[in-house]
Length: 120
Image (cartoon, rainbow, N blue to C red; front, side, top):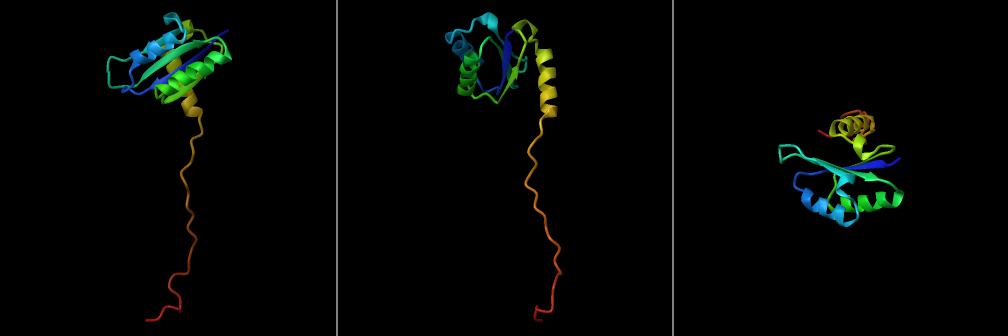
């Protein structure tokens, strides 16, 4: 079964350019979906049906050239199963499960304050 490679893009990206690059690389329009919201100032999502590992790297490269914010690989999923609501639920679950890097923690040691070495 195929997989889905999904990429999240900023609203500043040109989705038409991305579509052209996908199609010029051999991806048919029935093998990818661009999810746009009515608010043109929000991010958009693109999902591409992947049938082999070489194609995964090729699509990742195209996504990277178009400044993808984040990519997600969903195995054993066809393009027919890649509805926006289904992908959004899976992405939300993955984001909640990620362990984020903790900020740098500085530990202060207790000191004795002013000692007798201080001259008045």
